[in-house]
Structures are given as structure tokens and as C-alpha cells.
Length: 161
Image 1 (cartoon, rainbow, N blue to C red):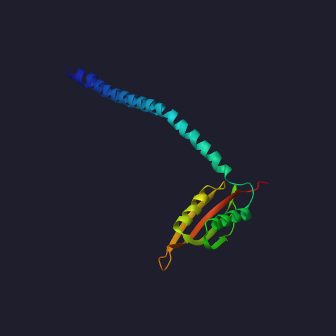
Image 2: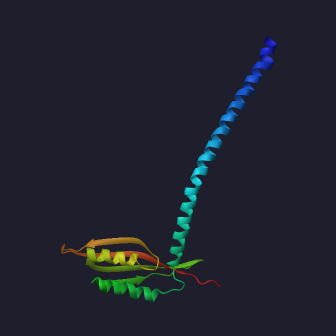
Image 3: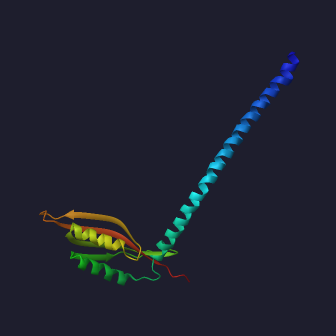
């Protein structure tokens, strides 16, 4: 009876325990795979939305450097919003493989509502503009005038070849 217990029953019990654990691990992996499989259509839909957004994103980057036209449009918007002390200063152009960018500094003075309207109009541009920093300063006499300083970057496609 001892020989049976030591050499056959106990090793068999250890193997049964290992097999039971492996079976539980496989069942868990199968359940995880099934759960992931149900998420696949959602992920594919999100991927398609991102691809659509990327296409429109790249469409907002012009083929050539139209910096002069951009400056004219911003100046027109500032005039339209009756902003004073207008100053647009370009920085040094940064060149990369696919896209080049020009940092710009925009300063003006006006009422807060006029400045926010300018930002909404800049956001509606058909050109990609990344606003990096905005500083608003109230006037000394608190008469409703706000000075605005903005650091932004505009992009255009690099010429290949």
C-alpha cells in the first residue's frame, strides 16, 4: 500500500494539479481572446475615425510657404476686430523632412471679447496653426483693455527633391 501511495498516487496527484492549472490558464486565455475579439470592431471604427481626421489634418498644411499671405490675413482679422498696437514677429524657420515650421509672436491690445473673437477666427483658418503660449495682461487703469501676447507656430510642406 505504501509503494502504491508513494510511487503512483502522489506523482499522479501532482500531475493532475499541473494539468488543472494549465487548463485554467488556457480557459483564461480563451476568455481574454473572446473579449478582445468583441472589442475589435470598436477599435477598427476608432482607427477609421483617426485616419479621416489625419487626412483633414494634413490638408490644412499648405504645399508652399505662404507666410506673407498668412500675415496679411491675421492683420486683416486684427483690424476687423479693432485691435490696437498690432505686432506680428516671425521667428527663425525650422526645416524638417516633411514639414517646415515658422514660429511667430503675435501681440495686440483690445477688449477681451475682441481677442477671443480673434482666437476663434484663427481656429477657423484653413491652415494649421499651433498656439503654444498665450499671455493676457490687464491694463494698468483696469479700463477694460487687455494686452495679448501669443507664441504660435505655422506649418507648410517641405519641398521634396
